Each structure stands twice: as C-alpha cells, then as structure tokens.
Image (cartoon, rainbow, N blue to C red):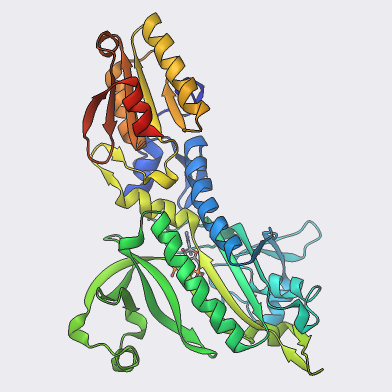
Amino acid sequence: MRVSKLFTKTSKSAPSDEVSKNAQLLIRAGFINKEMAGVYTYLPLGKIVLDKIINIIREEMNGIGGNEVSMTALQQKDVWETSGRWSDDVIDVWFKTKLAGGSEIGLAPTHEEPLTQLMKNFIHSYKDLPVYPYQFQIKFRNELRSKSGLMRGREFWMKDLYSFSRTQEEHDAFYDKISDVYLRIYDRLGLGELTYKTFASGGSFSKYSHEFQTVSPVGEDTIYVHEGKKIAINQEVFNDEVLENLGISRDELVEKTAVEVGNIFTLGTKYSDALDLTFTDEDGTSKKVFMGSYGIGPSRLMGVIAEHFADDKGLIWPDNIAPAKVYLVRIGDEAAVKQADALYDELTGQGIEVLYDDRDVRPGEKFADSELMGVPVRVTVSDRLMADNKYELTERRSGETNLLTHDELLAKLS
Ligand code: ATP
Ligand code: MG
C-alpha cells in the first residue's frame, strides 16, 4: 500500500475529550476515528489490524470444528422474553428501539437466545450433535462508563461461539479443548506472557467459569495470580474454598489489575430449558441439549495491545497483527524513486506487506509517522545510502539500525 493513496493522516494530538491511551494513540496514528464515547470507526489501517486479529481467532475456531455464521443485530423481543432476559433489570445494557409499526426490538448485546432458537431448526437427533456455531459480530451495550477507548465500547466486536453437546462429559472435553485454544490465540497475538486463565463465578451447572485476563494497569478487574501454575483467581470468587479446590495458598499469589479479554462459560441446559431445545438420544428418549458459550473481544484486544505495546513515539505492533511488516521510506528524487519503486515491487511480489511512504514530505515526518504507526521494520532508500549500495533497516521495537546490502535485506525480510 502506498501512503500517498491513504486518505487518513496522522496527527500530533488526539481529541481533548479522549482520555484513554489506546484510543489517543490509535486516533493520532490514523487507525480509528472517534464518533462518540465508546463508538469508534475503523479506518483503513485499523481495519487491517482488526481483521488480522479476527483472522487469527477464526483459524483457531475453525481448527476445533467451529461453523461460522453471521447473526442479526436486530432482535425480536419474544425470544428474550421467553428466557426472561428482555427486562432492563436483568440486562441493564440493552439498546432498544421501535419498528415503524410500533413494535419494540433490541440491538443484540449477546446471542444466546436467538442462536438457541435458530438451532431448534437443525438439532433433532443425537446425530446432529455436537455442533459449534460461532460468529464475529458487533454487539451493542449501553455501558454506563465508556472511557477506556476500544477496551470498553458501546458497540464493539465480539467473537461468540456456542457449543451444543449431548452430555456434560462431551461438553467438558470441548471446554478444556477451547480453553487451550484460547491460550494459543493470546500467544499468537503477543499477549501470551501477560494473560492468565482465571477462575471466575460460574452458574448452576459449574462452580466456576473461566476468564482470560490480561494484566494491565488500566484494567478494571482485580485478580490473584499464581505465576508457577500460570493461573489466576478473580477477586469475585477469591476465598478459602477456591484456594483449597486449587490446592494453593494465599501467600503464593500476587494481586494484579487486569482486563478480561475472553471468557468461557458452561451454560448447561439454562437456555435449552427456557427455549425447549431438545434432541432424541440413541436410546429413543428426549433430552435437553447441553450448552456452553465462549466469548473473545477482538476490538478490546486491539485496545489492550495498542495500550501495552507502545512508547513515547507511538504504537509498536506485534508482527502477527501489524498493518504491514515493512514501512518503506523514500528520500530523494528520480534515482531514489526508481530504487524504492523496485524494492516495493520486489517485496510485495514475495508476499511481504509494505507500507510505502512515497509522499513528498520531509524525511523527519516519514520517520515519525513510521514510528507512530508502529510498523515492525522500517527500510530507508536514499541517495546517500545508494552511493554505498546500502539500505537502512531499523527495528521499531529495539530501535536497532543496520546498513544492509540488497541481498542481506532480502534475507532479513523473507
Ligand atoms: P466486562 O466484565 O468487561 O464488562 P463481560 O463479562 O460483560 O465483560 P462478556 O459478556 O463475557 O463480557 O463478553 C465476551 C467478551 O467480549 C469479553 O471477554 C470481552 O473481551 C468483550 N467485551 C465485553 N464487553 C465489551 C465492551 N464493552 N467493549 C469491548 N469488548 C467487550
Ligand atoms: Mg460487561
């Protein structure tokens, strides 16, 4: 991609009403635009990063048998009344509106009810189970406070997968499997070391649910971390009983603030009871489907990553989700243009993603933008470097700079 073709621009300052560091940086770098508190537009570079996060999650969900769907944001009231969750006393973040005819509808804050209802069309026999539909969907929640940028949106991206199993044993096996897959996702996003599988409150079908909490000074949750076992306990369930269950003692734990970046939950037959989702088992009897739900917040993750991987110059994206691998800076006229164009073609020809700064602006501005945007590697082509047959390569993370020949550069980048 050529920077001259990007309609977005970087800026030195963020809107004065934006208090979160992640949104300030992302706005300044031209990745997102603030529409109102908790509501952000993804601009071209931000959309690339969000899509990369989503694609990593998608690959992992498909790897454990997920079937991707895309459900509607508009929700009929009936199905939510049946489960008892239409009331604002039960879900206090509903956005509701009316159809032209006057009937009330809602904007989905989550999808347990409509999906359970949908699956009634497809689940009849034990042969239809287990199944794992999932989606990436914008959820709407009228959050009371939305001051954490992408980390707490009023409309935000969620990956929600729901499991439909014959038995609790079948469910438990999948639950353990997806738990491991979640940890792999955070690893691939560069958050592995900071993220803990965390015991949190469960429901009537399991004592605990599990959250995935990323340690962050701006987190809203308090967790107690066991470094040796790489697990944590959410403050909400932190008591002698949980310590005993886990066989750990209080003095092995460290208190930290963290952000919930995902959770997995055993629903049991809560929704299949409410909406009468049954199947005929092998022995001919009718049974309720055993369910689970598994959420991850791609947009919250983007905020957490932007917040954590940054310095005073700007963003520092992990390689896997950076908007490009290389930021190519061109300094000089005809000869430099020719060499930079050729390098751009060569790198992109090899499948290497390049953001090519082909603008006629001062070199300092190009360098500053490459740092603000957080592209992992910067390569410079200039008249001075060409005289020595060299390219300059600078790593965003370490700031390390090296002068390389063409072949050395290619070897390093491919
Ligand atoms: P929180 O306690 O932070 O409000 P939650 O328990 O309401 O989270 P879930 O309903 O389990 O969250 O949603 C699944 C995932 O969606 C969360 O783990 C989180 O990553 C993400 N998420 C939830 N609310 C938001 C939000 N307002 N903005 C961005 N992401 C969110
Ligand atoms: Mg919430």
